[in-house]
Image: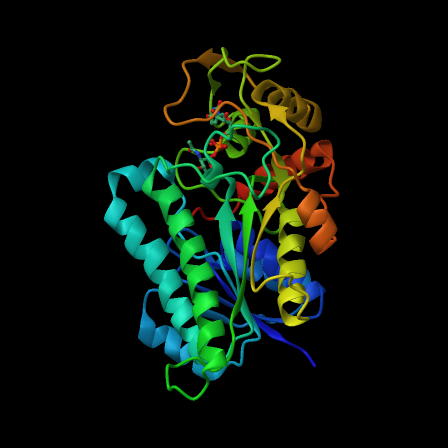
Length: 358
Ligand code: UD1
């Protein structure tokens, strides 16, 4: 039997890649997105890559009536919740907008999921929940640090909301018949992504940053393409081998595959506990300068850069211990950094023809 998976935010960067991998793995997919930071071109890209006329609903996940209609129309086995705002600086300027959107949409989704007997929900979390870890690489047991932005706080809050909802649905399941709106037990997985980069090898979908990119890779790609004159490297005095900060850059296609495995684990009943958390990274620390050099190799273009002061709120180094994902999910990253950077460059060259989200 084919299972149907709801992908909220499926027109976005990670959501669109995940929709492709889900379809490739034999799932039916329904994409829901309000197009606030994405365009229909991504949905078209998913359709062209897969050859499947994926259903798309333009709706805001905070809109309970719209969500009710969607859940009435399809019978979802699982949902993956990507729909969220993601700009750290903007979240500090507009906290209420971030909490309303990121937390409100997740609550609306979970209310529907429990009422309609969805097997489980995968939540799009982030390594940002660890802040600067005390020990590296960071494991899932490392403590979460106080968030330094409403964006980061929204990820922590949503993890907790998912955990508590899973626990409560278990209690309700055991006291069935209480009329509490829980059709059956709900399960959950939070995936903590490290730094997603790269694009689908078809060149049909990828990251479409709005305005000046805040994340490093789109900025590097635009600099290589001559759209920006130079990259500002934030901090050259970190206690790292070359003085620049270390991150774990995970290929978006590898990351998308992790969601497929998480959904299969939920539906197949393979979870060790009903709420689980996994790091999704490569386990390989890469400095800003290594990334720049790698991109120059992959693109054959120069990336002029200048080292400036550290960016407020940045951590020095963070990379994943991926052994839990490997042992439990049977997932590990497969793409080399060179291959990932080549895909980002190919996308940069084709994306200049696409409309940017306004
Ligand atoms: C950032 C967010 C994080 C979020 C993640 C989502 C901050 C402080 N953190 O993580 O909460 O989950 O994006 O993808 O915004 N860099 C430069 N020059 C640039 C841009 C970045 O040198 O123009 C450096 C940064 O200082 C950092 C590295 O590149 O060392 C990666 O930066 P970025 O892509 O913004 O990711 P994070 O800061 O890790």
